[in-house]
View (cartoon, rainbow, N blue to C red):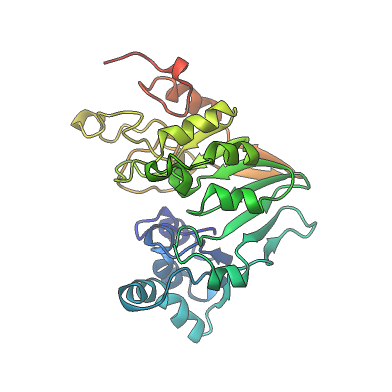
Length: 309
């Protein structure tokens, strides 16, 4: 598992439905509640069925910040004390998991131990950058909430067949305050992802995803999918007749539970790797057809937008 979501994460129900499932590794890219809030619940459910929990020290552990991290990660400490699991620092070089053949494999690209301890103390910019090597020339990149600069600096050779985020579709370089000095378009061109999956909440207050970032990926020919429907695509989401109207409830279609709040655009996406080939689930075309019916679907070029009131 790479990140476990907040306290309402569907992962908790998913594990509850699989009472004998074992988890080899849980990887926490950084210590923000929306990425690790469910770790305590997962440990309660699984107890000695978790192999190892990987995490970083991503901020000064003093005062109020210390209390926040203590509350979130204390279940890991207590479980390790009881012998239920092991813990490890999420630093480079580490291969977290690999198939017997060597591919696929999950590796840490950033940070090194020195970068973790002496580098940026911003939890977002300290996020681990992970690579799932599909085969010798394709990778999926999980950068947590890190920057495009760190992704570009540490990406493996070959094609990035999917970039997750980063930072829910608003990397640090794209924020308005950095607009005058940002070289994010150059960085994105260098990364050159084929696809992007953006994990985003319907009612988030941070204006995720950023339309300029989405537009920049479109110009590169990158195919974009968001997990949730946001006001950028439908400004009338708060109206009662829109409540519960998912574009495509991918979680339910794939036999998973989902959060009781928010509207799914694609929801969950299932990718499988077979004989070194990455395959998407059967709902890709259905989702594209439904997205095309939205008024302002930011994952599509403006030329595809429907002119409706």
